[in-house]
Picture (cartoon, one colour):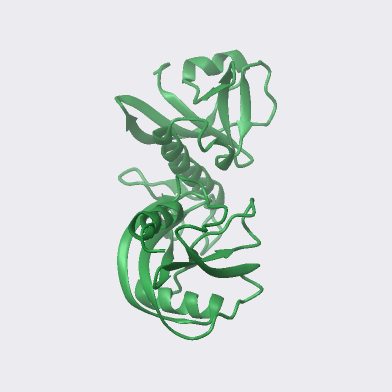
Length: 261
């Protein structure tokens, strides 16, 4: 339908509308101004009764004003949060399609599976589903302090709770213990589930926990962290985006320890 929303990506950036410094997601009818059409569309579902599609844009040229390509992180706080998460799902779908066009077993071109969201190799029958990479993210508490670190991978010099990807054959709790030990050299206890959040850069699923300091001296792995330390609710450093579950963990700490620091 012309009024359906199109979450179109080119080179990892989302096509957005820009009118008087207000950003939005284009409808298919808006795209007629660009003299191009999105390709390889994937139905995502409906948002407030409006159908949403992921798509790939053929190139980075834009023939009309009022449109721009922007990285998804840069749009945090600039467009509605619900649109951000649909755009994130679209990014995951586009990335999956681009990286699974050929069978990983025999190299033959894959095809869309008609009865589910998957790709199948018509030659050998191998089925691939959209990739989801689970990672743990942990708020470690020591008395009235929280452990925060600064990663060289962060686009801004903020501090956050520690995180890491789950390895094959590992439980989430084992991953929590291993990641904390590897990155800062301490033992943790009383690991408790907090919540989860998709993080589409490009396909992570963040599983959040809280834990308590058990033993050891902080020893930073310089390949993972530039700095790490213990912070009270009253002296927190620059923090990550409010949309992230990392920030949700930190705000939970702040709310529950602001009167105890």
